[in-house]
Image 1 (cartoon, rainbow, N blue to C red):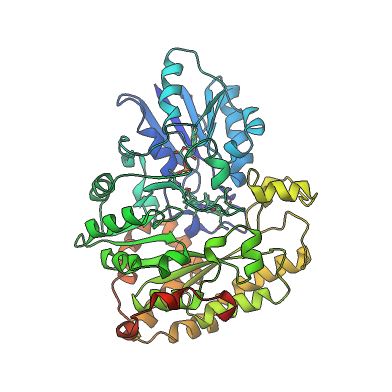
Image 2: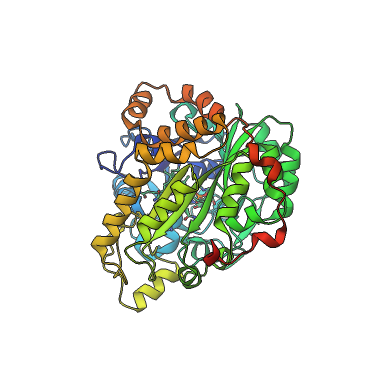
Length: 474
Ligand code: B12
């Protein structure tokens, strides 16, 4: 059987928001994971519109398309195209799960939730010509004992970070703006692989660098500890995401650093306890954010801080306060978002009930636009403040100021090159990508992620009681 798997682009290539480097970071891991369930003699063509022009002139037997909210329009039009040729089209992913009634109009079959357990059932039904309209993931979810991800289908040279992996699904927390509770409803919403499987997967990945795309890499501390123990001495460098709390608690972060963690994505989101409570992000309450930052810097771990604007308690000062804090605390990169109520989340439901959703044009649900009636700030203030925050944080002045407050020259240079490299050389990245040289940049990234210890490391013996301070003390 001929199978075509497609990840339509999240942002159109001609949009001013399309940053070639951002969209050439990671391969389509979800689809490569699902490809593993096909027979060895099935012919699979995996295409990613972020990095290649889609070939739509073929006639496969089966088309599988991954639908996110901002690629939904493109996904549906590709689906229509193939269905008009009589090809069987399957849609799945986050947006299909959030809005199955919408997606169903464009597909022969849709998948709701993760597909590791439902795809094999569908494939059997497909062979027996008795497919159902919907396959819903419910009980028995696991990612243990699965066939290995079909990395052979990934065009490695088109990505800066081809070695992305996920060792868990979901997260132990329940933030009201997150996709997680709606995607994993009707069953377990946080589960992991076994350590032996993860280490085997790592051994299959060429080069030194790894990027864990898990929502919360330390979500299961026992597993994380065993994994980091197992990774010691493998000479890997890696990046991943975790909560601020998990950085402050115990010594897992030291174990991670010893195993090769060099940069971490942290969801600070907001400094306001009211906002945290309102969005059920209770795990961030009463934490000393600055302490988390210091601890990471002392271990030579760079920080990508995530911040959300537009919570009901935000005022017009929130942008400056947030940007200044990031610069003063030498956050390496900052990702700002405008609060976005994704369909399926409890935030969306409460905004709908309050009559606050102002558009259902999903293209605007990209965390760069205001899609709801704001409180405290006007929509214009919010969008302007968001844009201003990016330009202020990534000004040369700010980059130099935040780099220079590190206490070793090596760390200063690392910070400077990493931050500037991410935001200041867009035309150069474009050139590198267009000339097929992206993979040659991997050693540069690895060099930036090499081990650097701060002088202040000796002073980081931290009393646990110091860690949980009221946010207002920060
Ligand atoms: C990698 C990634 C990206 C890449 C996307 C490209 C890529 N190659 O995937 C990049 C960096 C470009 C990106 C950008 C953004 N992202 Co992003 N990203 C991720 C991340 C970290 C990993 C995705 C992944 O590989 N998951 C692992 C695989 C195994 O899971 P999966 O892809 O979901 O696939 C499974 C199922 O969905 C299903 N499935 C998927 N497709 C299909 C298709 C079929 C036919 C079937 C049957 C089943 C099926 O089966 C798979 C196996 O179970 C997720 C977080 C996460 N943990 O998922 C966020 C995530 C998807 N991103 C998110 C966001 C918000 C964004 C941004 C808007 C953020 C921003 N402001 O920068 C931008 C998008 C900008 C835009 N215009 O839309 C949110 C989405 C929230 C939502 N409700 O939609 C997530 C969930 C992060 C989060 N926790 O909030 N992102």
